[in-house]
Length: 215
Image (cartoon, rainbow, N blue to C red; front, side, top):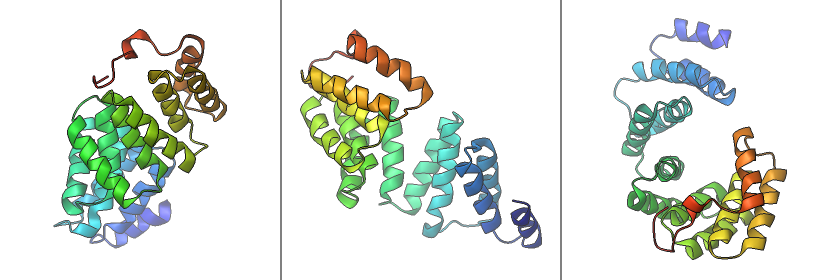
């Protein structure tokens, strides 16, 4: 890291050293430091060009991870302004909207486009399945989430999502199988009690909806 700092000092007109520092901090999950490094990189950009989309995308991720959503959303939208058909930006932004339970129609449109461009990306297919789930379109959710699990069978989040969708269409035994699998794949620590509760009790009542009704 010190070498990059020295390089940033000796080349004040270049954004790349700060950009690389941001990437290193992000990979170490030091998101506050990453956001600051990307800030410095962007200040050196001048007029951003399409090839600079990733700086805004990665800073958006850093902002999202430190709960600065307005800044994150602005960066994702800026990245899409620079590169309108970037599937990974569309996926991150759309999935975030779905988790916030808003902008469902725009999220679905983005994810359909992203899946068309990256049909073998399990995370993007999972996002499309999850927007269908949130919209109460459970059969469509199952179809997409089954594909996502086939593409990324070791992902605890995707297996957990498929379990939820199975429960909503009455496939309760298969739902518990998926939740058990999700637990075995080392999910995030704060997700473990939620999955264990579903294994014991099924989905909570506030997630029981008729098909076609947003959750």
